[in-house]
Image 1 (cartoon, helix red, strand yellow):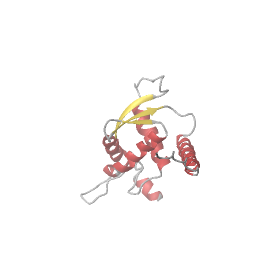
Image 2 (image 1 turned 90 degrees about the vertical axis):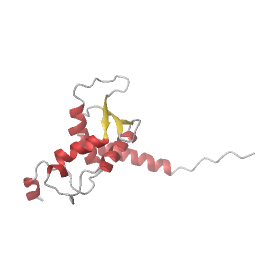
Image 3 (image 1 turned 120 degrees about the horizontal axis):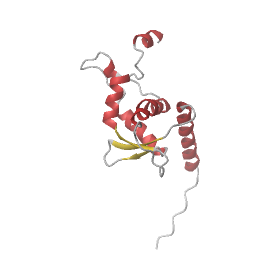
Image 4 (image 1 turned 180 degrees about the vertical axis):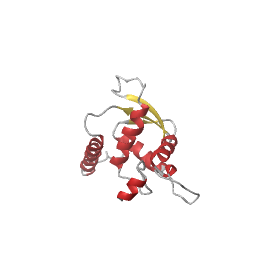
Length: 148
């Protein structure tokens, strides 16, 4: 592994799906942070709203940190995959850090700077969300009103 890292120091993705907290951290620190420059802070949302196109972000990540930064041919796999980036943006929607757009490729990321380590922040946010979902799924469903 050390030899691979020395040979390809800028590659952050391979052809296996990365853990969601890692992917969110990479998007937040490398992509959205850069895109936030010059974007006005929205006091109502307490964030900088950044319009995002999933296909464009996927290609940028492939060029900078993935398959497009390596030699490739028609048999080469593309990574990171579009579906990974879309799933990450859906996770941000769930965490209330993004809003879906009019089409499936568009989102608005509600960017804010975190004081703590970004990877740890996303691990905590995702863990809290999973815990909340688990607690909610353990509740008994409310009875339906009688049908007349």
